[in-house]
Image (cartoon, rainbow, N blue to C red; front, side, top):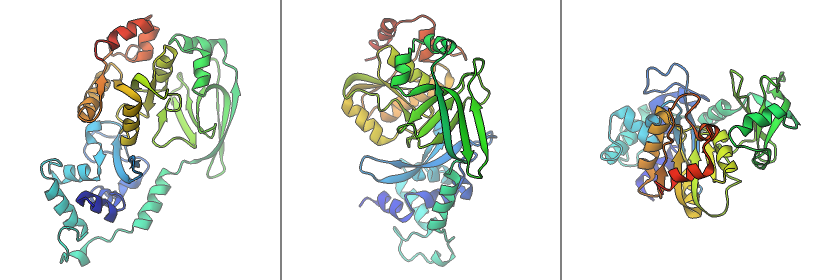
Length: 347
């Protein structure tokens, strides 16, 4: 067994390491970044990442800055001001000493003074922090209105594509919270509501493009969240990893395979990348044309280029709110052939 695997085994897949260096605040559903003082609204959370062999480890996801994301070793290194690449053994020694794991230095004389961390209680708290306040939901689906078809149509997305990806127009959704309280969300011509459905309609992401709060999640959603995976072909020339559901739909309507995770800063599970590598010749990161999208696509290629055939595509757009993603690109009148002209320059 590799040394770092032994550390994971003795720290509940790294959870104890996170709690020791970040405090129990990291067990909350969302918490403020420990590395960014300007993080006024909580943007971080912990989740379990599973590799192809079924082994799990905890990972910190920071939706505000991917440079602050990492596994337990990377985060501990940041806290301890150590280089996780060049000082990894020194890092393990510090973790071993601080948590009294007795892996590298058995018989630590400070063991009896170490903080006792109740793993069972930690998992209960983590589970509590992750439990949605919504117990159940009942959607009322309706046919797409002409105005809704027009909304999707400007991005080249037709009704057949929407239905293939389990996207429906919502007349209403009734949500029941754990405390028994019920609240409803309604679709209207001024504020339409759409449902991205998962796992045989047992999970939903509500999308209201004109509302102040555009998204709402409930039910049995995929973990990690990924949209478009079930619709991917068995094999293909290339596949796009893009920023959101609408981008996936727009690409699909123009004949291209694509998926989206929950955000451009989301950690991409290793097993998903490995499967994409086996099924497609090239993986292309196609994020927004704004500063964040360009930064994140550059980082993803640097992170994975030694292991996978990955590329990045920066769209020739202004990067403004109305001109930054692939759906905007098609809405501006560009065709699938125009888009292929951009692809062939990088593949």
